[in-house]
Image 1 (cartoon, protein in one colour):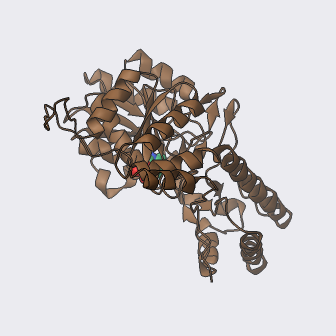
Image 2: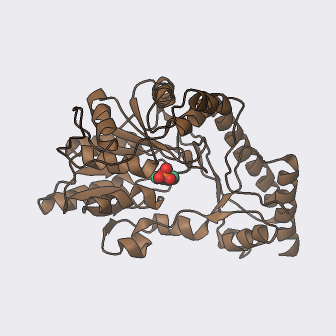
Length: 381
Ligand SMILES: *Cc1c(COP(=O)(O)O)cnc(C)c1O
């Protein structure tokens, strides 16, 4: 039986054209015309920010922290409810993460707890060197408040838009609110280069420096000359070709992800007639969500004791992948020493939340099977 994945790559018609071009011209290197073209496509798409195509979203966050001159022992504010790729680069720099809880509306960084953290650190004479909010599952964070708070204390923002390419707030693309923004093109994201990422900024000089640091910080000289530590973080010209093709279907993929979300919402509405109440995240006013993954909350108290694990395990039996929401970073053993400001919101979301299969290439047969298994859960309960 074929497995139904949470989110599998979905290629269009044009990726191979660009990949063939790379082969035909022998540009099989971590630089080249597809990399330039992909960066231009990203810039055209989000309208304002220059882009550096990199080997992953995690690499982009690492470079962003370098650009902000984060030093060992510095503090960096970071959303707790996220994937480890948002936070690991803080440790690469020898810096200290300070995790901020979510608020219930967007599930993203709580401005109230951010304020509490900034004030508390300020009292100790500490100014955090960066703040990393995340637009989780493609829902924009409360950037108006976050930007205002960070501006007041001169804390630069690195927006982790790895999951939110195409999502907007007041019509402005996520990733363009902060000093730096990050996208990911990992295999499970809304578009993919198999593995890849990008760093974006309105500041062209910063992006030029990012490209320099990502190519081993090679100084201009006929020989190899280095005055700084660099990284090997550029995207390959072959993979950037996939990215160029994927950019042409991005808006279509977003429409399809949003249709997936609507389909689940319509389906679970039928559960209400049986006394169940599955909750969905809202689309907060002023936002456009890309609905990368459809997520639900299953509060056992409102669902006759049924838990998200009951649903996940039933789906798994039929080879259908579903997954709990991200386990907050402040609960992860690797970050046990980190500071945390919060009230239990993200812990609760982790406890009752589930991601459902959300690929854009699921067949009608896949959908039928998913709904059949879900129907059976309440029939047996
Ligand atoms: C995927 C992801 C990243 C990291 O991206 P990679 O390209 O996999 O390194 C960072 N943050 C979030 C929230 C992500 O979902």
